[in-house]
Image (cartoon, rainbow, N blue to C red; front, side, top):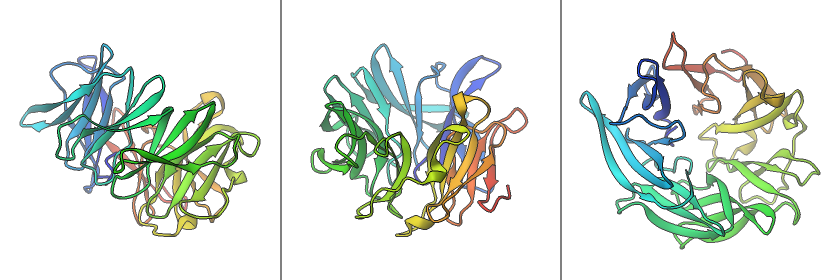
Length: 321
């Protein structure tokens, strides 16, 4: 999903040609519609896509240890492609969509450190190296609306803690999550509007889902309703926007997987103030872990079936769908 929720992108499988190709979904109109963006060659199923707010789609391809980036866009009856260069690192992955929706960033992991790269946008020659962070970093959550503060889960000296990387100060780092000295603490989702943070930590004695508030002195809370009970894991994937300074009322959508990955994933909806997790059956063909909230509290879930190749299911937390 683009950061402004205007576009989505996925790899689609052509049944006729038996090959993968990028597909852009337009999501901000009355009905969603898909635009195929096949390049000159079929894509590998492990390439990454990231839609930008201007309608272009960034594609990350892995080619013999080299990581290449290009922008794809509709061009008449075909697809235009603008190469952006590449990164020579063994392990590279795209970061979540950046605020503003016109820039894209990636992590490059090395044996002792992790680099942060600007790979699209910014009006500069890309890829551009922005920061080098000691340790192995994963995850990625934006903490502000300017694209300056990036939270990463850093594994260092046998422990995983979330740190904040200031991209305008050469990658200067500061701690964000350190619940106890001996706990592994990972940030799963952050909402700059409300300040709500969703995290996973073993500080309570076992791995639990918890929540806190950015910049607050409140302790992290671990609600019982987010403990596994008949399911193996719940993973947050979308936060209701526009809930300024009201983290308790902010709705969060979860992908809920059954034990051992059995069965189709469910959709969970939770607010800190409600102290319960509402569960909804996912639509057939749901692209698991994808979705967006509207400001008025409607959850929209993209799905694709043979009958509806580009669909958007709408769920209201009251239970109607």
